[in-house]
Length: 504
Image (cartoon, rainbow, N blue to C red):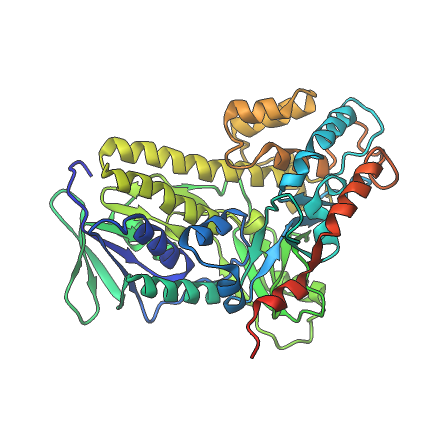
């Protein structure tokens, strides 16, 4: 936009988790202003509805809206998430599995010890440097404990969630209507631009054009507004990340409900296992350049013990990358319409949330200038690229040699961004990785603890064939006792979840 036209009507095109989350964030931001927020949702176009994990930032979304966990979690079969376990990504002794934790307040006491041990290990010393040994969330996940402490525990606990994405979208829809957000059920057939190239209206099947001052594109991979109407260039990540396909299918869950996502290396990608209250969500993210959908499904079914099961598998194609401008003219792209990173670190809702929330900072000031657009787009592009680089690092540091897929990732046949090259160089040269992460200002996307957990967890150390102290007694043993005592303040996961549900 080159003019400062007052915004009185904001129209969000598309529902699902992204559309209704954006609607709630924007409506909450402008609740003191005379701005009408409307969601136009097609009754015939379905939603992807696969992403079932989050980062801890999702809690801030619900907290800002005043929505209690006891209200939304039971309706979405949601569970608590302490972090992600990575199984089979590394073949180095003692590093065949590691845990990427959500760092809690208590870890401020143990994190310095972990980093000091990592530095010592990089210098060849025989000390424990596996992240699993140093973080409270790892102990909680190991014992299926909910990250909700007793009231007398004097430390704040950080955690994310697992949830049924379809049910979350329905819940957010309900809350949006309660907030006064308008809903129009209509199928959009086209878009009308004005003389300056801004979107003037969307055309709907069997109805009058729907006009607004500002539009939010939540139409998924179709990108009806940002892509089809405004022809915004797309920046592909295909040269950086090889996976382009996914399969999803459910399995039964037992009496115990874990508090971790499990990411397991497969022949041509990785599988996820996400615990919900009523089932496991399972899937396989893979590269179609190395295998076929049929072979990938067979591999997943074999892993799950479902070769003879009649449970249907959903096959999905993924378009990895981002638009060049998330905010273009009078349109903001949110969710899959703006871009997608494969779900390895469950960042989809995080990026949706940040895209809408940061835009609201400009909207609240009434600054919709071209300069504001440029500042905003650079910031959101940095978020996408920063998360992309962290995901690339998982593949680059793998040591598997069983398939050409893993060899290609480790050999880096695709391009490694300069920022990530510098991270690797800093680590391998034994310099302070924290200083480099902060120098690049990429700790906004993944904090120092996450980078240390990834590199140390994968066993990127000198003398790679020496297991050191990671699998037995070592310097971390007193810490282990301390963390175990802290864990006594937490309850069984299913017990906590059952307490949220009203007595019938």
